[in-house]
Image (cartoon, rainbow, N blue to C red; front, side, top):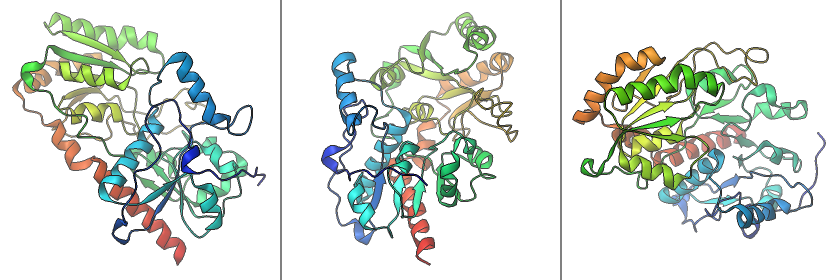
Length: 362
């Protein structure tokens, strides 16, 4: 494999990635004897000169202001927050250390170009979802298939498992102490319509979004609309604080952090869950055909709300959903507390990492 040798990074030269959230970990305790994790997270490769990946976000922020937090960065930050809470020690982007300790596990959460930075001798834990699909992995990196690869949910694992023999399902935890319920008396809007329709938006605006909006308005419900990629987290949090329920529109989700933030906030969700094949147009139907059945809410049960498959299904099911939501019959936050806290996510990640380390030690 052709590689490029790089100087080792250290916590004082971590990438910024367009957000104020620090990547420098809190000082860990002794971790109760737990192994220190070696975490690597990068969102950008150097573009014009060595190290410019650290400078570009600062320039961008000066010119455009604070940018939104990407999904991959949110996964990394929430994992670190969970590790801090349960006292598991970790290093961040310490390339110098990992090259001196080829026997230790390297946990690479960021973009896959990190694999090209030097000749990794370590066992690797890769992901979550460094590539959208295994067919994207370049030939020079096929050897990395033998390492353990993380994906966020079961349907995604089933799609990728024929290509990646060592695959584990791991959803990151949600900040349940940040995404908290607002008292019902302070709610002023009936429905938050969350539009995350990514492909063929004009078509779905006609066939799905507008029929849903019109039905809600005809039913006397007040509606607020928020569109994916056009808001900051604080805007979304404020909208959830105002709204009594959420209609979630997305073709599919590998985890669905925004939806889970709503659930943690005590907001019941009525979700478009059309099922069927994975229909990302970059892959379907010519490059990838996965017919196993996808989901827009892979982490969801009856406490969270309900689902529908199309506009007709929404109209048929809305009244029942709204009656239960109005009566407070749902308990969406309970689901998140049971399955998706920061602590649970961090402990699950550590268990997977420990199992990988034990396998390589044999």
